[in-house]
Length: 553
Image 1 (cartoon, rainbow, N blue to C red):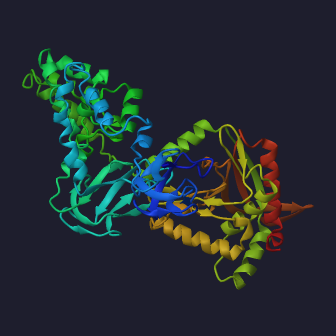
Image 2 (image 1 turned 180 degrees about the vertical axis):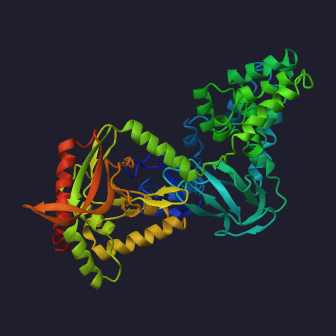
Image 3 (image 1 turned 180 degrees about the horizontal axis):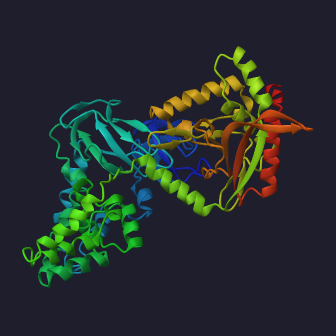
């Protein structure tokens, strides 16, 4: 008997997975334990193993597509077995029953009872679309926080031959600029997004297939939009300005009249925006997120009001615009994907997590002496930031409550220490991760930090480089900042802000001596870390830096 393969929950923070690679194809024999596919989760790329034996009858998700937990990935069963009932969720709805259910749905608004015999007409285009030798390329989910990607550059143009593994385009995500590789061979028939255009995850980017194939049927969902033809007849009987919004608002056949992504529909509902009045910038005029966010209903009536008497007040607009020009110019800078994500995630963190801050002064005299000696033998130059990172990692092992995440209904305390290091780049901030930092030497940490910082600035970081931090450090000391507070990098419970090392004076009895002080501030999520817990962590951290030889043992 055929069995459904669903997207498993591979981590407790996972909500969906992205198919990174299929290791089996339809028709292959599958044994229990065979790796069916590689799945990219919010933590890592993991193997999806088969738990049933048989033949791979069906693959429902293409490489690069994201699938929610419990979403159908594939079907395994006996060769030749009919599995359609499983996909439909109804054992009796096979074959001919399926089209019958679809036919009345398309004609519900005009006349559900009398148009049953007219339904074969719209179904005719669906068959050729299914037989077209072409595949749609969609925007893949390239990072755990990605909601859309921007096409930086196309490496292929329409009409070019494409082979599996060829780089089709460069895509800017919220983390880095990454290559979009082709997984189908054929001709690039269609490019649906121009360079510089932002495309929502899972939206159409291109079509690859047999040269000369009629790919329009694929883009139109197998010719189903043809069912919209009878609907305009009803509005003609009434006043056109009122009829169009009325039909759209009822939701009857709205998919054929107003093309919009699910995210755009959600935002429109929240903002009270009528999608019928929004001009879509996506493929085939589809309305995407940015169309709704930038929609200004008040901008349309303005020209209509000015039109009746353009000559009556020609001087007034000129008089109004002249002072504005004299006040000085300005530049509107489009938001990059990285900046959008930074704004969203840090806003969510600051206004969701109850922050509190703990500041402490640390004597860095011994750390400065030790650094000079370490660099005499280290193959890589060790910085003060590397000392800070090592001390924080060792302190986290002693204070696991700080090495934690707030997950809503529980607090997760990690047995490993992965420290995110904030790196400033031209477009914002990236936080690559040093994994198992407590187990690494100062020279190893120094080498990894330099390597990841270089990748971050060159936009070459991969998802595995920035995912999975348990604690974060932000150091602005090299910019001369004495002290500051940092916003927690979710899902971490804490972030440590490091200021500059400043020379000051200390008194030993009545004798004044120079000393080097560094101020640090720990930002804590009060839902998972209490004040005393954070203070205890800082005391341990302070002790390690003021007596740094202990970190070398």
